[in-house]
Length: 333
Image (tube, rainbow, N blue to C red; front, side, top):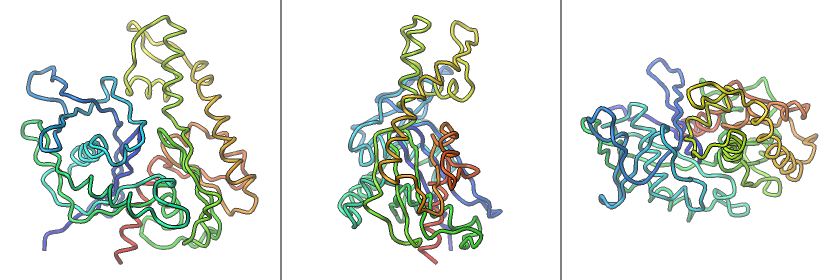
């Protein structure tokens, strides 16, 4: 029988994270920026399009590249859009799943995944239906985009709890308390907050999604760079992300120290995030742990230390993706 790989995709507004398990049993985690735009981008070598895809029967064509400024992904309906569908296909293609059939698990933010105490079945099904629409790679000899035998949709912040509670051998962790755990998932456009009770239930009154994320910092930093250095360019996701990670940016061929601008850009977003956490979970004294996960968690390392029970996983960027995969494995066993 042909082996069908299980693959989880944490499909965020800023990054697409793809998680699978290799032949050696180790997790394989890959990350790609959600930098996408309509139309095709010409190849410098002239050998064809750069990561260009078509969907909707050829009516929609988009290119994925972090070398140019992409269109905004921060809009309502992103998770059921052609843009989302193509970004997931691109992440899977770039991760080596061309010409394959896979079992897929993608995600939704807390406020989309739930309606009150119940799952938002209508939206979950719309996301599944959106992913079933075929996507075709227009890059010569790239192979076909993967097909999905099954599609599951998980809740992003709760997936991070699954990663915390279940080890990488898919066994329950017994060295930690998981009766009451809060999750702060700092993503690109949004921050998800969820409180998990008894490992199975969630506290609806202390869960929600706020429009605060890493892209706020990127946007503010881009404006500050233009103001400080009197430039007019709209910098690509690759340039801004590298600047945030390194503290420098190359302008006119020379590195410029912009750590002061990064701190200023982070300050306003950090205060908004702090206010949101306090409003939803208070001081968190009744919780066993508060997990800080997502692509933006490491940017707010100081905030983790403000909670005596704050936890920053070793690789918070992939907590949701690993949790989605663990959810697939545990639920199917």
